[in-house]
Image 1 (spheres, rainbow, N blue to C red):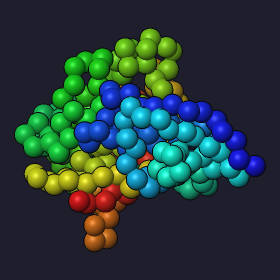
Image 2: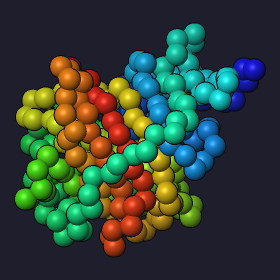
Image 3: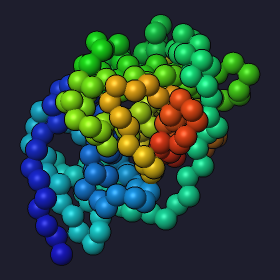
Image 4: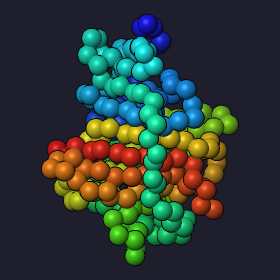
Length: 235
C-alpha cells in the first residue's frame, strides 16, 4: 500500500553542493520516516534540489523521496552490522581538525556539515588526518543548541550529516570532488545539544570511482553514539 506522507521543500540552509541538499542531511530525513532502532540504508538516486516542492511516499516498508515523478532518495531498513572506525580522543580529534584539507581546498565551501559556516548556522565539522592512525580522519563536533532549535535532541538529519561528510574527507585530496551515493547508518543514543562529540571516519577501499568508508560519532568518553558505512562516487 502506498501512502503520501508529506510534501515539503528543503531550505537553502541545508545545502551540500550549491543548489543541492547535503547528502547526509537528506538521507537522515528519509531515515526518520522509518522505525527507530535498527540500521537504515539510504540510496541517493539523483541530487535533491533546494527550495522546490518534494514529496515522501512509503510503500512496502520503504520510503522514497520524489521530485515530481522522479525518485531522488530511497530508504529501507536492513539487518547489517556496522563496524565503526575506532575511537580517537577529543584531543587527537582537535589536533586533526587543524589539518582539515577543506580549509585550503573545499569543493563545496558552504556545505551545511563541513563548510565554513557561522556557529549555530552550520555544523562546522572539519575532519583532518589523525596522527599515527592510518586512513583515518577526525574532528570535534559541538552540537550547537541553535541547530536543534533548542530542543532536547539533535535531529536525525544532523546526526546523519555528521556521519556523511567525514567519510568523504577520508578519501578526498586537493582538487578532488565526490558525491555521496549510499549511506547506511544506525544510531545508538541521542545527541544532546550543547555537548561536544568526536566524529571519526576511516577509508575502507575503492573500486574504480566508488570510494568506501566507515564513520562514527562518539561521546568524548568513547561511547558509541552512531555508526555508518558510506559509498561515494568520485566526479
